[in-house]
Length: 84
Image (cartoon, rainbow, N blue to C red; front, top):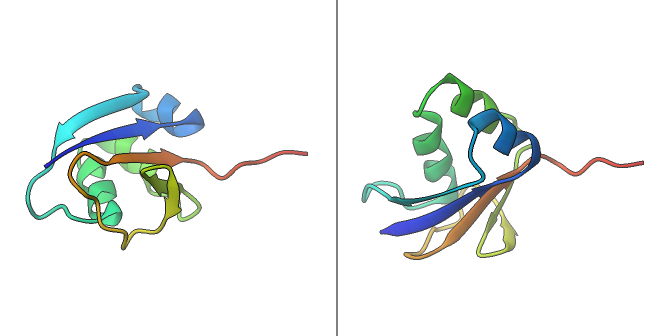
């Protein structure tokens, strides 16, 4: 299964890339499992993706860790929006 993963704002800065296309191992089937899979890339990845406030979207719809990742999906990770 192949997916496109996009990283925004401080997450992008921490991991050093804005997007990546990758083939997932068959045991990675949810957004949460994808997050864990990416975290295994190293300390900067683990730090960027560890925040409980991290926002996630699958195919441009906000989601949670239990959301299934279909083949060809676009998954995005980004920090919570701040403003004021």
